[in-house]
Length: 476
Image (cartoon, rainbow, N blue to C red; front, side, top):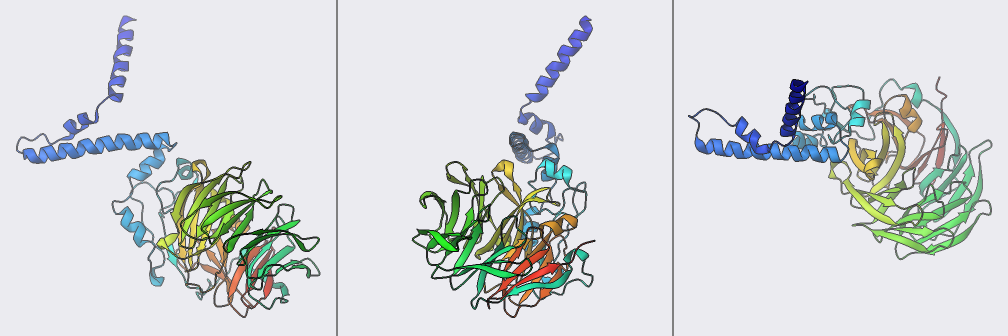
């Protein structure tokens, strides 16, 4: 018994010694033992080893404190030596070499990833593959692959609205609605219509004196809040067809969203480099946050605790928001792919991606850069760039959208308008031939894109004022 006790005590002491070993011990242990070695070399090597051991301990502690796992840490330390240069070069591929596929230096790890700082949960959930990262270049005129997958089959045009004689700058379906559609134009009008049989215009909302830049439906689809270049935000009652509130600003109002949980709050991005939170009931500004440039696009996460916004210099921000008070505070700042400094035209959040195994964010810039980020909600909306696609630069502020239901079947799909009057579908998981389908029917650049709730109808608008609603074929 006494021997067992002594043995146990000695083991415990050894464990304590292991935990309390000073990094300098490793330096002594690993230095060259040969007496013929230059003393200066030994000293320098010892110093470097000491620093390496110390930084390794600190790094492991940092990962442990931030909830990272061993697998994620192992993946990080096994990254290629030229990782940084690889990441830069992977975004400058040429059309002939659009995909960059690099074998992993260690065991197969997470795929579809540009940044190695991924959580261990993501690593466990991803299927093993030898793909590490990629970006792709594609022009809008790229021919889609010969075999169009059934998920992208469209049976034709469901209906056309051509009552507007000016450019339709933005269009959306109602919240969780399959048939309520609205679109805003550069003449300041908003048109609300139904696409159910027979398709018809319900109301035309007039009040803005300049371009409608953005609008959003309330959660019950009874109200629309719109922003305009005329420096005003207007709230409309759809059933009555008139404006019930006007909020005047000091600069052009560029993007707007209802709070997803507290519909009494409106978040508005403007040309004065601010996001303002407006009380829907009183019309008063209750909070604001400043940025480096004009806030051109935005979206909320599903909890309402985060706002993702893009500015005129290609930066993407994560802003935390308090649902009860509307208080704002900036948490993270990112660049879109290729360090683009072009205005962001689309910011779209999605609660789940099959490939990212979590929430994702799509950012589209006017120079044709599409960026796909994973969102870490547990780290206040920290964004990790997963992949990117470079399309032809745009003159118009062309928008893009996720294809959520299609992406659940296979791949990660984006639909976007183009300057050549076509609507294109892209699969971001393909290193080559990312364009999988296109719709032809518009006579001018396609600017706006929107899916209905069931994703069986796709609406697109162009610079001539035509809105086409396309009907997708039923998947077997």
